[in-house]
Amino acid sequence: MSRAVRIARLAPRGGRPASLLLLPTPRGAAIAAGRKKRMPRKPPLPYKSVFPPFRAAKGLHDAAAMNAARSGYRVFSANSTAACTELAKRITERLGAELGKSVVYQETNGETRVEIKESVRGQDIFIIQTIPRDVNTAVMELLIMAYALKTSCARNIIGVIPYFPYSKQSKMRKRGSIVCKLLASMLAKAGLTHIITMDLHQKEIQGFFSFPVDNLRASPFLIQYIQEEIPDYRNAVIVAKSPDAAKRAQSYAERLRLGLAVIHGEAQCTEQDMDDGRHSPPMVKNATVHPGLELPLMMAKEKPPITVVGDVGGRIAIIVDDIIDDVESFVAAAEILKERGAYKIFVMATHGLLSADAPRLIEESSIDEVVVTNTVPHEVQKLQCPKIKTVDISLILSEAIRRIHNGESMAYLFRNITVDD
Image (tube, rainbow, N blue to C red; front, side):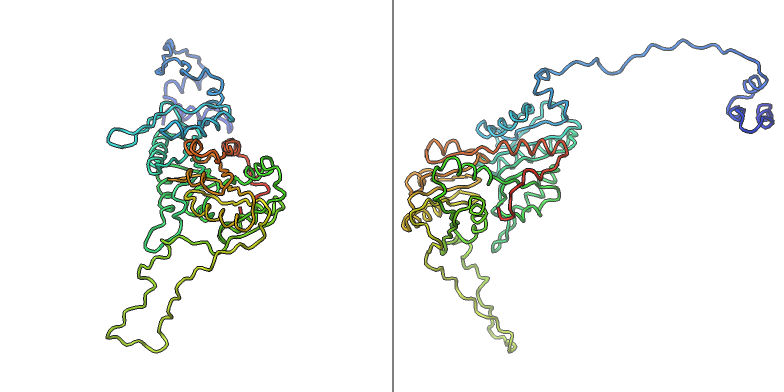
């Protein structure tokens, strides 16, 4: 047994010699005997960093950019067209930040390319994507940018999509597909962790996603427009152009303390009523059917004559809906309301897609004014039709971004909002 070990055993309990077991025998014996032996020390090596000296990145000298960088979030626009970045610029101005540096463009063969021009590691990234007429290109831009940010080690990727595309295809129609659910799965796969949107066509769409969805409302902004821009709005009546929109119209009427009218018997989309063979009786040639198992015959749908439930005579009619795209149904509703005695007709909608000949049809119709928000760019349509007015909703979107990044409650943004909005 070594001498160092024997000394450790003879030491009293609680003493320090137990550490001598780890030392070599000669040195341990010397320390145990109390002899001081100084070992020559090697001079320390000069420290050399393997990292280059820190230099402030170009562009961070701007106060807004520095605030966004220090707070740990950045805001990007995934649109490749200048007209679609207007909403993103309004939001960043309210936040006191700058748009993130990125390049989004289409190559000559039609492919979409996205390049992130700054570091996003460990930050909360908000992608603002407005949907122009070319819906599929906008969707690919969003997917590719989200995946690029994911591979660049962004902490959270939040999509700000005011108008969610394919929201009308959220139910099974004949032998079609639920495209909205497919798009939700694609966004999750690309790397999105949260979505901020506005007035989904069907609230059940939120169940398609595997991550949180904040479905904001534009009704407070449209109600404010009614109160401030229609001087005699107290003489107005809120109109639902179909029974499906009655709940939304009722919510507006209750908050404005106005009357309610519903147009019943409006022609529905003929595509939904096409005979595709599902309603035909089964083939029973050379087959016996057990008594009591005969299928009842399907009665053909008969559309009732168009009627207006409610008094609109001598009043202002305000038609409310979530989307105005094909305006033929709105124009037809306006003609009916004029026949029933309405002397002014307004159309209020959150998303003004206004496709095809919508500006011309509105200009030639009995509609006095169409009011939509800027969730979808429609500057060209406004030039074609002066009846189209825009309400800015960048305030609520910027506040939602701030609250989500800071971990604050979103309940304030939904105050005075009913489930029927």
